[in-house]
Amino acid sequence: MIKVYTSSVIEAPAEAVWAQVRDFNGLPKWTPFVAESRIEGGMPADRIGCVRNFRLKDGGLIREQLLTLSDYDYQCSYSILESPMGVENYVATLKLTPVTDGNRTFAEWWAEFDCAPERERELAQNIGQGVFQSAFNSLKQLLR
Amino acid sequence: MIRVTRSAVIDAPIERIWAVLRDFNSHWAWHPAVGESSIENDEPPDQVGCVRNFFLKDGNHIREQLLALSDRDHISTYCILEATLPMKRYVATVQLKPVTDGNRTFWHWQSTFEAPRGREREFADLVGKGVYEGGFEGLRAYLRRGSPAPARAANAGAMQCQVSVATAFGGPEVLQLENRAAPAPGAGEVRIRQTAVGVNYIDVYVRKGQYRMIEPPAPIGMEAAGEVVDVGEGVAHLLPGDRVAYACPPPGAYASVRTLAADQVVVLPDDLSEETAAAVMLKGMTAEYLLHRTVRVRPGQAVLVHAAAGGVGLLLCQWAKALGAKVIGTVSSEDKARLARANGCDFPILTSNYRFATEVKNLTNGRGAEVIYDGLGREAAAENLEALAFTGHWICYGQASGPHDSLPDLGSKSGTLSRPVLFHYTADRAVLNEMAERVFAALRAGTIRVEIRHRYPLAAAAQAHRELEARRTTGSVLLLP
Image 1 (cartoon, helix red, strand yellow):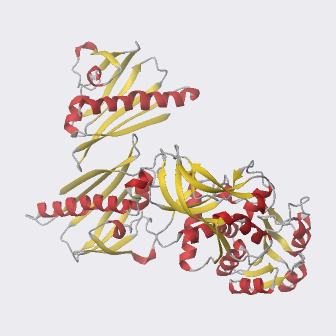
Image 2: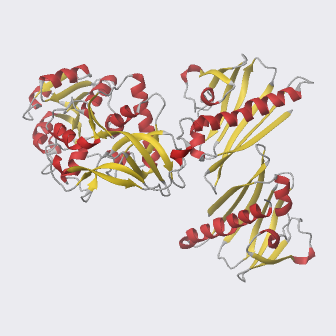
């Protein structure tokens, strides 16, 4: 089991950041790498257990299930059901914390998963930088 | 119940901030509202359960107890035991988290407590603004102290510097001063403007090629102190303007500015000068591991220290004496005998031909020395074996007269031979910090003292080596860039 942790400071109040990221079906709106997304079975996008089925701009298909969502803690977590990444037992959490000094947001995103040992470094880099950090960067652009 | 939460982002790496906050008594140094503070009963300030007893600058008196401390999660939790303020059940938690895209730190500070009815807002403001927000600003100012002026900090490119270079393997004359450039620090590196460089016997071995640690032409030197100019990515424990020191390979310390790996660099306490640090890091940490790690010297043991008036020798005498050992030393002149005696050596033996075993035995009722600190090497091997007590420990940490020809006949004494190298002990940064801390504490307590009797400009490194090799120096030798 390896853990990838990425964090950043976003120059916007936590409510504004949360409004962007709480929509489990909203990846195409705020990440640079998702082309389209839908929630399976017509469930609401904030119902625990719902599955988002999305296509990356590079063509890969991913299915992820919402495990927790807390508007009180500005936190959600989800697991990967299917993906071309070659990871197992993948659970990720996205959490926002208000920074009272400057009314900004401390954003954390981490994932734990299993994979072939020789791919650990590559996957940690791809997920930590290619996914989490680049999504943070595009949030910073959107909320500037 | 009142809950107060404040958080901030601090422009410093997490380990640097945590090094301050994990010390439960440090608040007097950085918090603008805190006056005098001390930890009760002399307990360590990072021991769970310790109590800090302090005054606020407004005159209020508070006792707080450390309830939890996690170096892994960077969390510290504490409560008020007693206060002249009418607050009850106050429990606070400080947590730090790294901001991974920029080497900054998120600081979360939260508490719950009760205050008299009608005064809730007053106390929520006192805690939130006066204590927490004031603390954020105070720590920022504390970390900025001594920072270089912006003009100097903006020096992003290479910096011109002077370096003493071994142009070939050989005598002192191979050391030449050259103008070179110290590159901007890369990931994991720090650039230091050096103010004092320690000269050690290992530098002579490196210069001669006896230790193949360089390929000439290359700079030499293992130890220096100075001020951080800038740090590279991922350096979590140093800030520009910090006063620092190091003692580590690779060679290259004989320089006015140096860029090197940051993990072996430690921050100096405010009460320690850079000259003292440059004089003591390598020799002090050597004495530390020789007396506390390779063996643990106990009261009453007979300890033989060779070159007892040398840099490491004097520190070994002082420290071994303070540990209660019977300290026997060898020296090469009357002057050095006096110096050794003044530094804790009970019995200095004057010898210029590596003869000392008979005297050591006479001084120990025929038993010999339980621990031998040997920096002499080959020429003294037979005498050392003779001077060693049964089941004694012979620690060969240097070889001034050349390496041993073969393994001594340890079976004749059930002896243990160690061939320790400082840099193996300091390779783990946690251990390095412990060692440096113990050396700094011993200096502060007066247990060990460094005498800097020889200062040379960087350009005179060859002269410094000549004096060192001719055994004309006592105590520590510094180069001042």
